[in-house]
View (cartoon, rainbow, N blue to C red):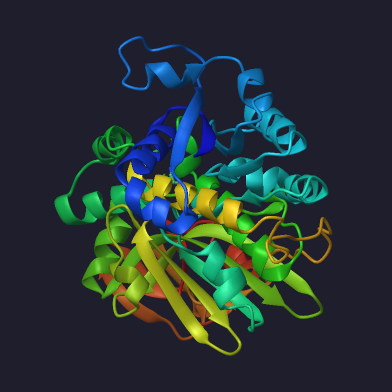
Length: 394
Ligand code: HSE
């Protein structure tokens, strides 16, 4: 019998216990032994919980238990999660997590610590929930130089945008539904303002380019400033608005990353990704574009990725060297240096400074159009008074 502990019994932690119970047989076949959740760390005991017998409020019960081989951290945030992760690794336990904030901010250090203690620190569930992306990126695409990754990386905002477009739901109602379904973060500001997608983008950049991408320097814009009018104009003209995280390799070992809403032609497969689904496109120099698609949030999809990492941690001892990056943050460049077309809405007609424009709508004294390609710096200087300005994904 292999015993594990779960730290945190929220949506994902509870899902981990359920997946281990429900999929006992396939897990047994992979491990050659039975897997059992022995202990669950909680802040408060819930007397009527079916998992009451697993609960402790003392981390030391996990840290000092020699039977516990793997700890699944689903506490979220940085404070307690960071401290307990370090202590678990130092106690010689593998740690698996869905905590993108912790990995984005401290992953480099935690991976180093895991290596020193001959254990694994794995975090497939931290990016795009149930979609396998970090393993394919680091293993199946290992023969490539990865030049770009972009994708819909937040289920909550994609769910909200879909409900607004398809059903005309208000932002507030759609967010409430996403919270009820267990998609949103404890504080949904991180979802809505692009911070959650930004942390995931940083992790993808770290693994793809091999250097730390510091979340505090990555521009992150969410969906709270999107006007329904632009959603409607875009739809009528054959485009869809989606929140994308994107990271790119630049010349001279440079790289950049950002999160922002994009206007996307409807014939691009990523424009058709709806509800809580995420999609991640990886561009390798040998493969070209490869797209990964599935549920990006929710109890069981995210728990599936955590439990797969538990199995992997036990099988891959002592460690996976390709899951690592260095702490060199030099080489990060402002994404405003990138060149792109933009969707712009202004009062009156477009100025000729926008180049050869494609008009999408002209009504009520306003024009919406797609500009010629220009840098982010150039578009900023031209759109101080614009009613909307969104990057176009070519
Ligand atoms: N709040 C996140 C989302 C959960 O909506 O995508 C999964 O990381």
